[in-house]
Length: 372
Image (cartoon, rainbow, N blue to C red; front, side):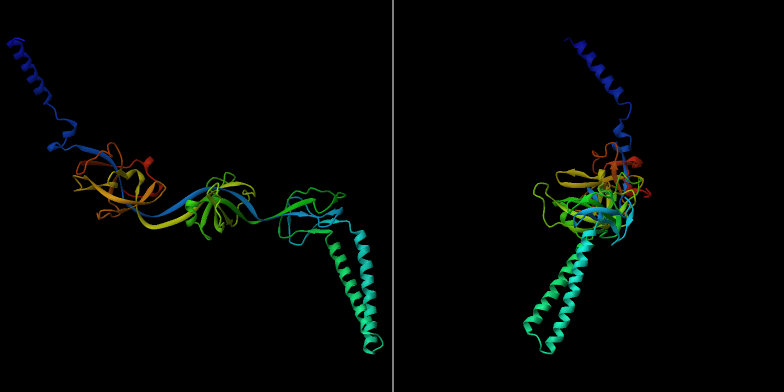
C-alpha cells in the first residue's frame, strides 16, 4: 500500500468516529451515563393467606338403606310412592300374613291354656296337693308357650316393611302379587337432610387434615359461583400403598337440591390460614445461586434505584407468596417491589428506574383494591 492511500483511509476513519459521536446512546439518556430501566411495580401488602388443596370427591347421602323383606311371601300392598318423603316407622310394603295370623292365634290359645294350667298348679302347690316337679313342669310349659307366641308375633310384624329413618324413597322393584324373600330388593330410603363427601388426600398433606378441618365444595351441577361449606368428620388411619393417600370424609350442611348422591364434586380443603402475612406476587421472586431475592425500590422519589433484598419465601396461594427478610433489611407494607416488566430480571443493583404500576391482567386477586 502506498502512503497516500493509507492517509486517505485514516482520514475516513476519523470522520466516521466524529459523526458517530454526534448523538447520545439510549443507555446514556440521563447525565452521567446511567441507564434507566422501565419496570412494573406493586407495593408490599399484608393479608391473611390461606393454604388450599383442591381434590375431587364423591357425594353421598347421610344415610342410605336398601330395603329387603325379612320373610318370604306374596306382596299384598305397597304403601309408598316412588320419590316421596317417608318417616321413620312408616309402613312401605305389606306381605300376605294369612297363614302367619292363624299360627299366631294357635300360639296365643296355647299360651292362654298354659297360663290357666300354671295358675291351678300354683294354687295346688300352695295347698301342698301337687309335687314341686308337677309345678315346675307346668311353669316350663307356660314359658315355652309364651316364647312361641312372641315368635309368631315377630313373624307377623316382619310382613310389614317399614322405613328405618326419615328420608326419600327410591324407585321400587316389586309390584302387588310379586313373591319376595330375603334376597329381594324392594326400594331404597335415603336421608338427604345433610350429605357427606368422600375424597382421597395425598400423604404429603395428611398432617394438616384433622377432624374439624373445613372445606368448600363446588360442582358443575350447581349454579356458577354457588359453594357449599363442609367440615371433615373422619380421617382414615391407614394409607393406601398404591395411591399413597388416605380416605377422608366430610359433612355438608344444608346441601342444595341440585346436589345429588353419587355426584362428583370439587373439594377445596382449607389446610392453614396465615394471618397478617407480608405478601408479594410470585413474579417478583428472583432465584439465584445465593438464594431467593426480591428487588425493592430504594432512593429518593425523584431518582428511584433498585436494591436487592434476600428473602425467605413461605406459603404460596393465589399467585402471592409470603416473605420474610433473610438479611435483616426492613420490609414494610407499602414498600414498592419490582413485580414484572421489560428488563426487570436484568436490572442491576443501584440502577436507575422508571416506575409504572403492574398491569391489571397480571395482578393477583389479593391485590384488588390496593392503591399504588
